[in-house]
Image 1 (cartoon, rainbow, N blue to C red):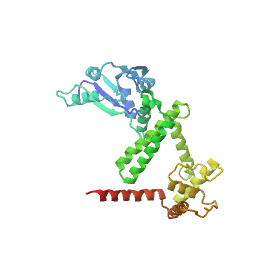
Image 2: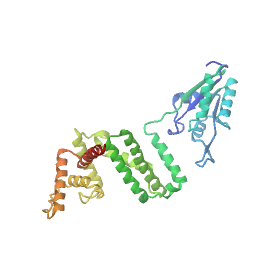
Image 3: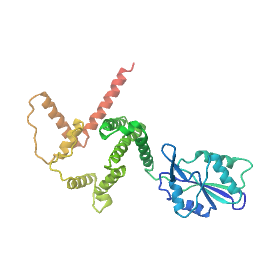
Length: 335
């Protein structure tokens, strides 16, 4: 759109999930060529809506790079008026959009672009930064921080009080897998992820560890236990990968017993699978059954042992069969 010589408006959109100042080359070029750079407010709002008395991170980053950013008071209409006046006067003006995306201002821009007569200046909207995979995890951490500070219920929670929810969400996730409902699975994984973030935030309040410590620990573990990916170890197949994992894990844990570290709260079939897997090289035999309970228990253990030989997850096999049985019962109950 043509207009006054040199007059232009460049609206720079940035992602709040990317570190302030990490802009694309085209964004830095737009800022460097601008006569004026404006932002809706040079001060960030606090969680309670009050003035937090600190520079907006993006404004601070841009100013720290040697640019002068003009704070513009008022609402979207006042912001647009400031931009339009500067551009009409022939100035090249850039606008830093806040982390909420300023939809009201963008709506005004769209209306102006489609209006007749058209404004006497160029208008451009460009992306100054883009989300990377996993960026929404930052949103989750921020939301959890705010809930922990401002929600009475969330403030009262401890690792112990949250334990039942962690167990519940785990089983609901397993149920979503069993039913094959991927939409349900996505939702339940989100609920499960919330528990990880929640527990990490509780630990941070206790000055024990943070969510970054949790993420950093698992990243280091994955790299350490996958030398065939991140190192120079060769692994021809999945069996070799698993063997490497167990060897590295054994060296790290230095356990005094093969059974150490097995959570006894596991469902019985899963627990049996774990014990059989750990004790494969330990000669141990069950005493002869003395009653029906011990006999059935021994038979179930033999089934788990057979499942391991066939490469079948006994716990999942039973859950799948029970899902099928449930479906048949419901079908039989339908008139």
